Amino acid sequence: MIKQWLLSHGLRILFTIVGYIVVILIVKLLTRKFVRLVEDEDRSTRSEREKRADTIVSIINTTSWIFFGVIALFMILKEFNINITPLLTGAGVAGIAIGFSAQSVLKDFLHGFFLLAENQIRVGDVVEIGGHSGTVENITMRTTRLRSINGHVHIVPNGEIRIVENMSHGWSRALLDIDVAYKEDLDRVIAVIEDVAASLKGDEKYSKSIIDEPEVLGVQNLGDSGITIRLLMKTLPLKQWAIKRELQKRIKKRFDKEGIEIPFPQMVVHSQE
Image (cartoon, rainbow, N blue to C red; front, side, top):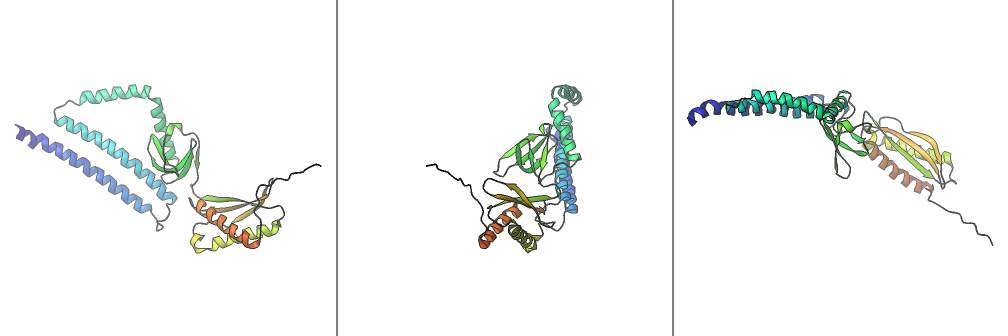
């Protein structure tokens, strides 16, 4: 009796499990090939197409795992002579009830759909959402997972996302405000800053990360103890911070060499005899 059951129902259950595993592996293989098709030769950074492909692949793999898993489960239950019709009917009724009671979940799904359809954020982007900033590690139809610079993970429901600040969409910009003392010759200071920025752009190590000519806007602010000069440099996505750090280091060294003073807070005290 048991042997007969194993040879009939048992084999079908085994084939169902093996079939499910094979389908998942095929989906993963196809999605991996899809990612390889859009990848370029530069492995150091992920382009816009590559980030979008990573996001789509993540959604497809998760959806496939759940969808085919449910089908395989029903097929296995059927082999145990469990009537799945009531389960399907109950699932439909439960789905309607959940639809009315879990509007926030549906809201999350709708927002997640538009986030992906409109290409607002992708896996690998650095974003700020709801006061939390970090690198997008995963996007599902319900939540978005961020990893902050200190290693903390933030799970944000898609329905709670109102404003997204994407710091790596298309291109980025290194913005540097440089303070100098009031006594300095501004034309000379601006010329020095322009020379430092141009030398950085000409550096083979950093030239690939800079996609436009540096731009010194001029005097940005007259502060209490110094004058602020603003420098802009357009970069590849996610490269703005490395470029900014290198600029600050080079400008400090050049200012020291040229004798240009970087101001510090000062207070003048007047005494009356």
